[in-house]
Every structure is written in structure tokens, then in C-alpha cells.
Length: 211
Image 1 (tube, rainbow, N blue to C red):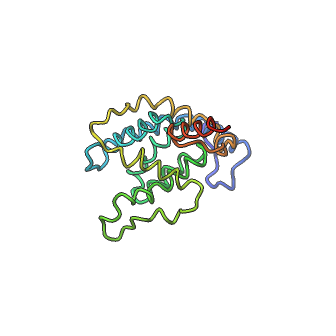
Image 2: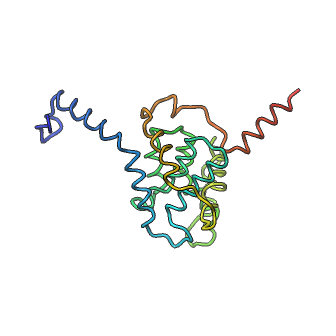
Image 3: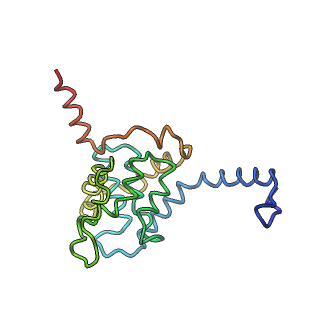
């Protein structure tokens, strides 16, 4: 079978839908490469900053990597602005939707809400913007994580003199994450991880200080 015969979904047969499912599963194996290509296109997008949007993405991921963040955080930092070209008014939700089947909920939530948190840094300069928009999320268990995500890896990553790692460095991580079984509860429901090496060290020091 090269293609189905139906012109309305309700007329499809079991064999046709099995064929389509196998065909689509095969296609999903190229997701990582398509995302890496989309990241490259961020170099062509509207910027105005001292670095391109791709440069911002790799710098964010580099800072996460150097903080000792795990692969879910690093890939989330790399892809957090991938929606800038196609979804400029909800780029955070766009990126989170891409990540949702493949990373733990902690990372997905921070990517989805980072736009609200980022307003802390510029909302007071623009009419009609709410600098404290992130306050609507107060009390959420990942509030502090997203605040740190933005402070350490997002808002700080517009420096043209920072020695960011190239996209090729992160490509194997993107392939690894998007080769996972989608919606695997062992991944998406995994226990939350500390945001950065500083928190890991602090937790270890507290544990060692116990009598």
C-alpha cells in the first residue's frame, strides 16, 4: 500500500489506519532533525538584540549545561524560544507543546510560563505590560524553578562576548530526548530535579551537616 483509498476518515479500513500509523511513526523519527533545522532558522528571524535568536538559544543551553543541569533542562533551555518565528504571541506555549511528550513536567511547565516570568525584567518599561505577571503563578510548585530558569539561563543570555557552545554540541542531546517513548510516565512523571548545580551542592551540604 502506497496510500489510502478513502477521502473521508470515517470510510477508512483497519488496514489503512494500521498503514498510516506505521507510516507516521516512521516520520516522527525525524523530529529531532527538523527541530535542529528550525533552530538554525532562528538566525534569520527578527532580532534587534546584540545576538541572534539562535545565539540566545545556544547561550541559554550553554549556561544550563555549565550549571550542571540535566538533559531535560538543557534541551528545554535550547528550545524554549523555538516558537518565536511561527508563534510570536504564544511562543512559550508553542515550545512547551513540542517538549511535553518527552521531558518531565517540571521543565515543560517552566518553558510554558517563562514568558510571564520574563516580564519582570521589562514590563515596567512598556505601556500595557504587567511587570508582575508571574505573580499569577504564585504558590505553584514550580514557581521558584521558573524564576531561576529565567534569571540564570534566559534573561542573562544576550551577551555577544559569552563563549556559547555551538548548536552541534547540543544536537546529540536533542536526538536523545526526542528518541524517547512519547508520554512515558517514567520520564514525564519523573521526580523533580534540582534546577542547577548550586542547589545540588546546597542540598548535599545540608545532608552532610546532619548529626
